[in-house]
Image 1 (cartoon, rainbow, N blue to C red):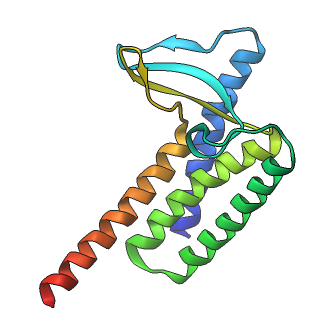
Image 2 (image 1 turned 30 degrees about the vertical axis):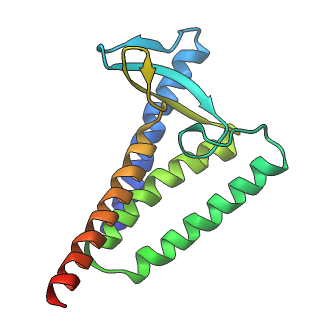
Image 3 (image 1 turned 90 degrees about the horizontal axis):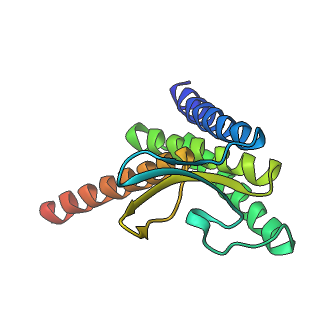
Length: 156
């Protein structure tokens, strides 16, 4: 039940923020807000996969990629159900973000990204709330595995 709450909460937060920015844009507001010298809110439409990589139009490749993303989401749900403890909660975080981005791919044929970190004129990939939770979940899973492997190595 907690995992469903995690997934739902991430999905809802992601949807609310994206819908708010999209509505502002639809009303004629340019989504290019200066927050600080390191952060802007700048709405772009990502037709690619993570961080805008491999962008394409809504063609066969786009739909094949979306089908692959659906399959990966189903696999993640399976792994979340089969695992215990922290693993399952971090997988739930990944699923919450992935479903948020999948919704956009299916509904808009693109994912709205808007968080623009930069140092001077060097801009990192623009991303969104869903991407944050996907990244946190992946990093946490990697750290758990590294810690587990370190313990195995120490115990010989």
